[in-house]
Image 1 (cartoon, protein in one colour):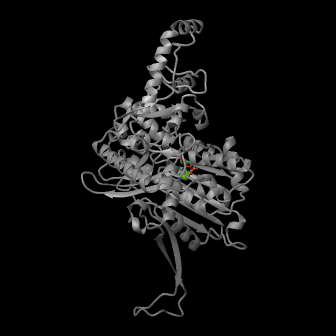
Image 2 (cartoon, protein in one colour):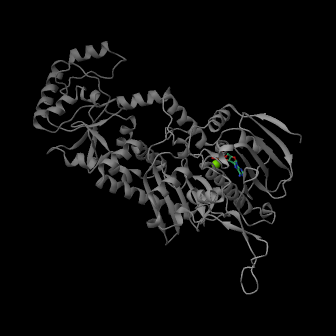
Length: 580
Ligand code: ADP
Ligand code: MG
């Protein structure tokens, strides 16, 4: 194939431009990104080779090798991973598909529109392959896909175009040659990416846990020694080359909790899962017993904007004996924990079975149930002991739990019992959040029901005519301002033997004497005014189901209520919104 020239996709150009004219100072992360890609590529080959051993082409010593060249001002990173064919090259290095990169661009745009560009933004993202253009004038990728014959050379100066041609490459995998920009190979600045000791320290800093050896050749010059071990002073120096592995290769999650620093967890979380916040909660546990596993799960600091949309992909990574199996296994944790990120590593998960079978495996279910239990326990403890932190969690993920309570009804899981004590609702009294237990604990003597009202916010609920009587009696009402609140309550039905009662629905049945008296008076009044009510109903025919005298009003003359048996007004509004 003769050399061909292609244009990058528009978004890629935009990103490249940013990289090339980077105002960021944290250039060094390019190495982490390229090493991480190399490691991913080896993971993929390893996984594929389990069912097709020929792909390895006899080469089983996985490795990522760094070769700095001071004279040519290049840094070469090569791996013996899966490699890429022509289509994949064009797809992967010509367009932006990966969420990390997209999220980065979005965040960047946001920051620019807000007038400030957070200098550290780039360091917080997995910005991927294109970060190489921060330090390289030209990036050359030579790659051959394992099991295929043709190798390709991809090259770009980051100026909007790249070239592609066929080439020779005996070993499968990918070699990336960075022709360093002049600030990046020594001289005026500290940043010399041909300096082996700098490279070694960067590998230790960012890529220590990578599971494959990251190697580099170190050459020493020494005068030879004689048979007694004495240096022969007048002999010329001899060169010795030694290949050293720079990383400890211990995945973070296999290390002891007590040896892991908070910033190591954070760095791992952000990089592994394309997050930019701090994690809100970290669950790291090792379990031996019925089933053996290590899990490292995180609750991200904030919910992604698309958490409840169809394009959000929940799920955790699966590993078996530290070998990657799959990225987003959504069958491990229940859907109401869709915001949890992380990984599970278990020797009991079989590498050799299909993903479909794996997802149904008994071991996976067992692990999932354990993890779910643990997460719920932690949340309950947080609610109990760190109320403020729990409310922060609730603000981000409460909706997910409420949906879980409700959707459990349809999927046959009993999420009500698991989740009812973790729910928070806003109190009409002080606008603060309270649990159902707290509400019930504060109920007035003789109060039999849990009263709630639906509305767009607390002010709207306070203004409901029905609220007046309850306020007079100092009865607390739960304000349901989120449309899913009411669905959750529908599913719970009762708490501690107390039924939920919507004050916007049917008749407001209060239990005290005063109320009963008024009610009786009303009934008598209704009887004597039967004719009037009938006329009104006829007048409003088709618009209302019934016209009744009510004792739920104090200063308002009329109020609209939902039929006790039908959906509430808020639910009707929610349904109407969903239909549109
Ligand atoms: P990400 O790693 O988040 O997918 P990158 O920009 O880092 O995004 O890389 C883009 C894609 O290019 C990768 O998903 C992968 O398909 C491909 N790629 C990059 N480096 C390599 C490599 N060394 N070997 C094989 N494929 C690679
Ligand atoms: Mg990457």
